[in-house]
Image (cartoon, rainbow, N blue to C red; front, side):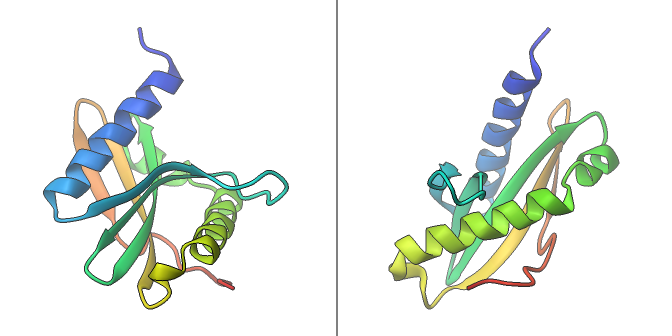
Length: 123
Protein backbone atom coordinates (compact mmCIF):
# COMPACT_ATOMS: atom_id res chain seq x y z
CA UNK A 1 0.00 0.00 0.00
CA UNK A 2 1.32 3.42 -0.91
CA UNK A 3 1.65 6.22 1.61
CA UNK A 4 -0.33 9.44 1.45
CA UNK A 5 2.89 11.20 0.44
CA UNK A 6 3.39 8.90 -2.56
CA UNK A 7 -0.29 9.15 -3.53
CA UNK A 8 -0.01 12.93 -3.41
CA UNK A 9 3.13 12.97 -5.56
CA UNK A 10 1.50 10.61 -8.08
CA UNK A 11 -1.55 12.90 -8.18
CA UNK A 12 0.74 15.88 -8.92
CA UNK A 13 2.29 14.03 -11.87
CA UNK A 14 -1.14 13.02 -13.16
CA UNK A 15 -2.25 16.66 -12.86
CA UNK A 16 0.86 17.90 -14.66
CA UNK A 17 0.36 15.48 -17.57
CA UNK A 18 -3.31 16.46 -17.74
CA UNK A 19 -2.39 20.14 -17.94
CA UNK A 20 0.34 19.50 -20.54
CA UNK A 21 -2.18 17.59 -22.65
CA UNK A 22 -4.54 20.58 -22.43
CA UNK A 23 -2.01 23.13 -23.65
CA UNK A 24 -0.50 24.43 -20.42
CA UNK A 25 3.24 24.89 -20.04
CA UNK A 26 4.97 24.18 -16.71
CA UNK A 27 6.62 27.10 -14.94
CA UNK A 28 7.33 25.55 -11.51
CA UNK A 29 6.50 22.43 -9.53
CA UNK A 30 6.30 22.35 -5.73
CA UNK A 31 7.22 26.03 -5.51
CA UNK A 32 8.21 26.78 -1.92
CA UNK A 33 8.43 30.36 -0.77
CA UNK A 34 11.08 31.61 1.60
CA UNK A 35 10.91 30.90 5.29
CA UNK A 36 9.03 33.45 7.30
CA UNK A 37 6.45 34.20 4.60
CA UNK A 38 3.92 31.66 5.95
CA UNK A 39 3.09 30.97 2.33
CA UNK A 40 4.07 27.34 2.11
CA UNK A 41 4.03 25.49 -1.19
CA UNK A 42 2.23 25.85 -4.51
CA UNK A 43 1.88 22.42 -6.12
CA UNK A 44 2.05 23.56 -9.75
CA UNK A 45 2.51 26.85 -11.53
CA UNK A 46 1.64 26.72 -15.22
CA UNK A 47 0.91 29.16 -18.00
CA UNK A 48 -1.37 29.15 -21.00
CA UNK A 49 -1.21 32.11 -23.33
CA UNK A 50 -1.07 35.23 -21.17
CA UNK A 51 -2.46 33.55 -18.06
CA UNK A 52 -0.38 32.25 -15.17
CA UNK A 53 -2.17 29.62 -13.12
CA UNK A 54 -1.42 28.58 -9.54
CA UNK A 55 -2.70 25.03 -9.08
CA UNK A 56 -3.52 23.08 -5.95
CA UNK A 57 -3.67 19.31 -6.49
CA UNK A 58 -5.79 17.16 -4.19
CA UNK A 59 -6.17 13.39 -4.26
CA UNK A 60 -8.95 11.66 -2.37
CA UNK A 61 -11.36 8.74 -2.76
CA UNK A 62 -13.93 11.05 -4.33
CA UNK A 63 -13.91 14.40 -6.12
CA UNK A 64 -16.16 15.84 -3.42
CA UNK A 65 -13.76 14.87 -0.62
CA UNK A 66 -10.83 16.25 -2.63
CA UNK A 67 -12.59 19.58 -3.18
CA UNK A 68 -13.48 19.96 0.50
CA UNK A 69 -9.87 19.17 1.47
CA UNK A 70 -8.74 22.57 0.21
CA UNK A 71 -9.21 24.77 3.27
CA UNK A 72 -9.58 28.54 3.35
CA UNK A 73 -6.29 28.75 5.25
CA UNK A 74 -4.57 26.75 2.52
CA UNK A 75 -6.05 28.97 -0.19
CA UNK A 76 -4.66 32.03 1.58
CA UNK A 77 -1.20 30.44 1.82
CA UNK A 78 -1.30 29.72 -1.92
CA UNK A 79 -2.30 33.32 -2.64
CA UNK A 80 0.63 34.53 -0.53
CA UNK A 81 2.88 32.07 -2.38
CA UNK A 82 1.62 33.53 -5.67
CA UNK A 83 2.44 37.03 -4.45
CA UNK A 84 6.00 35.99 -3.57
CA UNK A 85 6.43 34.19 -6.90
CA UNK A 86 5.15 37.13 -8.94
CA UNK A 87 7.30 39.61 -7.01
CA UNK A 88 10.38 37.54 -7.92
CA UNK A 89 9.39 36.89 -11.55
CA UNK A 90 8.55 40.25 -13.07
CA UNK A 91 8.24 38.77 -16.59
CA UNK A 92 4.71 37.67 -15.57
CA UNK A 93 3.57 41.20 -14.60
CA UNK A 94 1.34 41.55 -17.67
CA UNK A 95 -0.22 38.08 -17.26
CA UNK A 96 -3.70 37.36 -15.97
CA UNK A 97 -3.66 35.35 -12.73
CA UNK A 98 -5.86 32.41 -11.87
CA UNK A 99 -6.14 29.89 -9.04
CA UNK A 100 -7.20 26.39 -10.10
CA UNK A 101 -7.62 23.04 -8.43
CA UNK A 102 -6.96 19.66 -9.97
CA UNK A 103 -8.85 16.91 -8.19
CA UNK A 104 -7.67 13.34 -8.64
CA UNK A 105 -9.82 10.35 -7.80
CA UNK A 106 -8.06 7.03 -8.27
CA UNK A 107 -7.83 5.20 -10.55
CA UNK A 108 -6.88 8.13 -12.79
CA UNK A 109 -10.00 10.27 -12.84
CA UNK A 110 -9.20 13.97 -13.09
CA UNK A 111 -11.37 17.04 -12.64
CA UNK A 112 -10.00 20.51 -13.40
CA UNK A 113 -11.69 23.34 -11.52
CA UNK A 114 -10.77 26.61 -13.21
CA UNK A 115 -11.02 29.69 -10.98
CA UNK A 116 -11.45 27.41 -7.98
CA UNK A 117 -11.18 30.49 -5.80
CA UNK A 118 -10.69 34.22 -6.22
CA UNK A 119 -7.86 35.94 -4.43
CA UNK A 120 -9.28 38.67 -2.23
CA UNK A 121 -5.85 40.27 -2.01
CA UNK A 122 -2.99 40.07 -4.44
CA UNK A 123 -0.30 42.69 -3.84
